[in-house]
Image 1 (tube, rainbow, N blue to C red):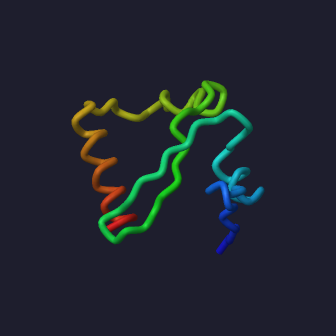
Image 2: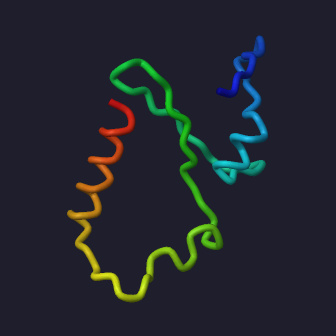
Length: 82
């Protein structure tokens, strides 16, 4: 578990290991999500195209609908944060 200290100005430093894990760099945007358990989730809201290039096309895989993608995402978020 990583810890950091809140400054008098309400600022925190995101530990290097977390920045590296999330591929965060100076100027990147992040968002804070508050769960039903009053826990805070920090999530990057932008990614560079180089970070995701090639992940959308995988040979031999059948395409899925947007509705199927949304359901899968909602299921995973619920499993992880509720």
